[in-house]
Length: 484
Image (cartoon, rainbow, N blue to C red; front, side):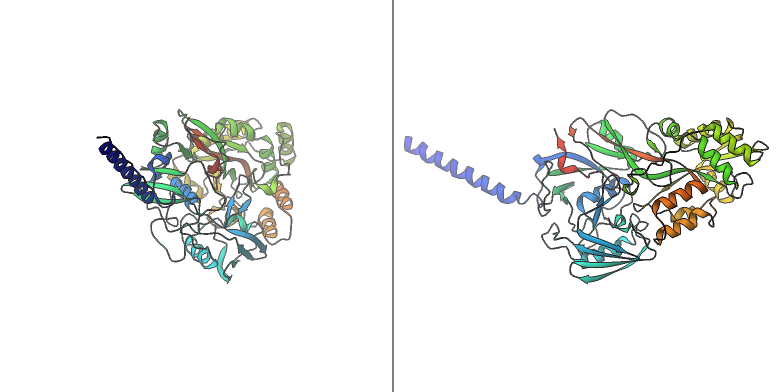
């Protein structure tokens, strides 16, 4: 009997060992096979479009692409380019020379210059990257690890635009092979991001991310509140913010909000009147009250977080008395007729900003009417010039390009022959310094800077991190994130 029991026990051990061996062989590498027990953090993705890095347009899917694909550079909070696939870059006049790092795709093959050139050409046609790359004409492969990009106009800050996703040459469709921090996987109907074990130096606590399908940005906050996802991002583009049951972090974005001026207006063609308005507007009140704290006051057309302005003091002190003095010396009758401030009524932040500016202008003698039109009629009134002032917004590319303000469809109300436009052209061609342009702009005031908008990143109690997220990559420091 004892001998029989001993045989049975031995068989059970052998079967157990075989079972363990079988599970290990099936699990494979973490970048190849999903381990459901590791699926801690959940992130949303929009099912309204395919997960093709060159086709996505929704904010949430574009952000997810930064986890799967690296660019030549990524941007930190100051919009400074940080090398990733690039080892070094040299900007000279209208060319950019790039030398590649020794980087591997998630399938273990090396990233080469032809891969980067292929990705660049696809990105040039993509909805997400074509604006950033508009100044780039072409690229030449000069060696297996070197490229030369050609630009239409000189741009000293061109490296900041080389963040397009790099994929393996020739691969198209749903999630082609990349060299980012995670790899896309499907397990039946479920989708995951699995840590890329071929990514050198990347060893996060969160090895697996579950992707939760949603129909659009409107569903993100509710998904976060009920715990379906652990993190979400809201760029507050609609000018509304609703408090939710979650932790929130303010995050600066590159959206410039300004007071546009109709330069053909008899009153505002006088630069002294523009200077008076610039002195009387309280940007801090607009940022804190009108935008409910989701903005940063600004005194130049550039993002105040930009690394190129880090040591510059651009503050303009509010001075009502000086504004009144300038108006008096100009001998302009500012009260002979009502002036209008045009604003999109669909954006509550901007409507409130217009009301604040109305009161401040009335305090120095203007008669002001706010025209809060629905978006369609707002655009129509802009195009036909039916305004004196308007609340405008322009999203700058990471290189802080202001060309669309001075030329093209965005130069609404701006004299293309103004001093600022000429000075900006000199800046691009290396014939003046950055602060020379800023000083000219602040003397000329083709538009009056108000603020740069913020976005809000929200996360649940289960997600623990410092969240050094930035607009270029909301998952910038995901390797430090923890999920309880």
